[in-house]
Amino acid sequence: MTPLSSAAPLAERLRAASPQAPFRIVGAGTWLHGGGPWADATPLPVGELRGVVEYTPGDLVITAHAGTSLAELSAITAEHGQMLAIAPYGAAHATIGAMVATASPSPLAFGDYTVRDLVLGLEVVTGTGDITRTGGRVVKNVAGFDLVRLHTGAYGTLGAITEVSLRLHARPAVDEYVVCLVSDGNHDAGAISLDDLLPKLISQRAPLPMLLVSTPNDAPQLLARLSGNSARAAALRTHLRGLGVATPREIPAAQVEQAVRHTSIEAVVLRARTYRSDAVPFVRAARDAFPQATLCYDPAHGSLRVVLPAGAAASLERDIATWYRLAAANGAMHTISVVVDQGRTLATPLVTSRSPLETGIKAALDPHDVLNRLAPISTAHLALADA
View (tube, rainbow, N blue to C red):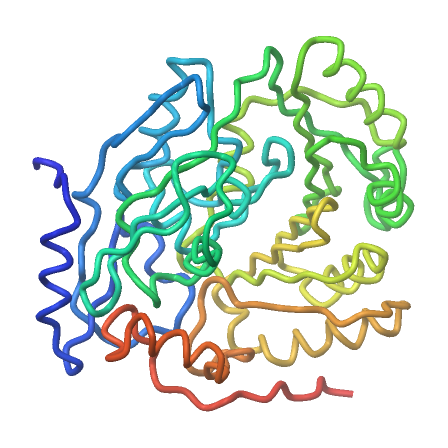
């Protein structure tokens, strides 16, 4: 199949779109069950719009069509000793357009970067068929209102992303993943306990990407990414040992991919966040409320990814309320923000209608709501947990 070289055919199709026939934007189609809940719609494929538009290695910036996969981008930049600093949750053949549209979180990101930190500019086709450009192709770009951040994480509801300019980084001389065991009430790993480790991860974090992973029936694990020159990597390893965890053991990147980034399409995935000062009650309450879940806590951002089996959807509302209650009982002082990233339906708690501001922005960029239309919903109220 020959890649498309222009967004013009896509724009033509949207200009002729009917409000009665909405579209669902499809890249590689690897995460159509994320976000939403979505209304029934005709697929609008953008995956054929792929390939590099412009790449000047000396500027550490690459511009590519949105259908270019993360694997393709990695291979192209590796030839010049460069890389994209993040590898989001999901498959390597997912597209960069989807990565930006969903603002996918990335475990163990180099330098703790997020998608929004690395997107410099976008080409977007709006719901009216207008081809718009926002941002630019240089790192120092401050012109105009920041529509780049508006489209990043909008799930394609404001426009179809067709081209992305990304900031790159030089590949470090050393870039390795290590795993360390942590003790908890059920597992004695000969190391620091989970409750004692969490405050250290916050106060003594250092420039070290880390992820605390807790799975049912196993001891918690601390994953870390050691990168830089050899001296810096050695210093980070020493710092890691100083936290009191078991001796770090190097693991291949493929093991991190399989254990952390890949998620079953049947799973229910929550993304939660609160102040890092509440880390201990936040994580402890999640382990108690969701005993069958895989938890991934990012101490750099205070965020927690909760991966639940499909059967958990029936009691999700009650279990989330229980989580709130247990966190408060354990001393949490701040609100917990929870989003259902995967497995969201009309019956799922935390599904709400758009705010007036969101409605106004949608009306400006997609007045007929033809792009990634949400299913009709009524505001859901979270029920109190059983006493």
